[in-house]
Amino acid sequence: MTFNTSKPESNICQSMLTELDSVFTQTFGSAPTRHFQAPGRVNLIGEHTDYNDGFVLPCAINYQTLVAVTPRDDMTVKVVAVDYNNQQDEFSLENEISAHSSQLWSNYVRGVIKHLQMRGHVFKGANLAITGNVPQGAGLSSSASLEVAIGETFRGLYDLLLTKAEVALNGQEAENQFVGCQCGIMDQMVSACGSKFNALLLDCRSLDAELISMPENLAVMIINSNVKRGLVDSEYNTRRLQCEEAAGTLGLKALRDISLADLHSNKDKLPEVVYRRAHHVVSDSERTVLAAQALKTNDVVQLSRLMAASHISMRDDFEITVPQIDFAVKILTEYLGDKGGVRMTGGGFGGCMVAIMPHDLVEGAKQLMAKRYQAETGYQETIYICSASEGAGEI
Image (cartoon, rainbow, N blue to C red; front, side, top):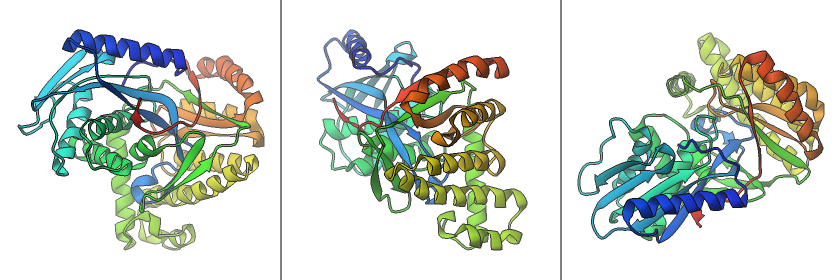
């Protein structure tokens, strides 16, 4: 959960680390002893399928949360957030950890640590400083990046018996139960387990993951609409309840357990809006598996078709897009044709689009957005060119 949106080139990362260490030293009186990081992510396809036990196809990106840390001999945790004007938080591991009344970022830290304790892990306190360049509120999982970074920090600092997947699950539990957003497992899992040069085809029921090599001839462009995602938490929870209603009515553990054909044949059992929500989830999960195969074979025409269908489904069935993003997707789709794909990515109601295209089309796409997006919508886009990156670990 950070505001710093500088580009993640090596010199910028070094400057982030330098500033992080400076704030740490000013706050705690000595330099940190260790550093950890966890990346944000972009989801190439498969939206709102994760909490329905379906498939997703994200990749970790080269924007990340950074943590500087020194262990303490007592049970106190002290934290300073560089990107929030050096706000500080302090709490004891010996007392019940409750939510902070006014600092939202603090609750992600508190929640992760509390849920580590609830899992039976025993550890002492720490001095922490946090910064990052994952754009906040853009659908690139700044919150999951923070959760995984904190989990990975304590895992490494105190040699906790946790796998990377368990770090991810702990972060999801903290967001679900402590922060109160009913997210699925995708964001935390790819932040923890991402791989350089690869996307991750994730089965959100079994947590089995297959690395899908990203074709070298294709660029990944993220376009931030800069439409604030103000409704995302409440609407996200509503969509989840609607999906659970559909599954319950049809006698399923989750929407993962029905095919598109069978869902259609049971259409009359569901309220119209609930059917459309389910239709998106089931169809997008099926599209995700096909998209992974298309990436494997560098079938850009198929990938283009699948991404276009995914966006239409999010717009019409799941109703989570906004006019500004629909406009941007329309003009980029016309520009790319069957040479690339574009769709909204993330929870919806604003945020980002993801586009996959040959490198020689990137500059034209930038120029098109610069010429038409703000003129049509009144919003100024921000564009990031990303690469698939490693998951969480020590720096």
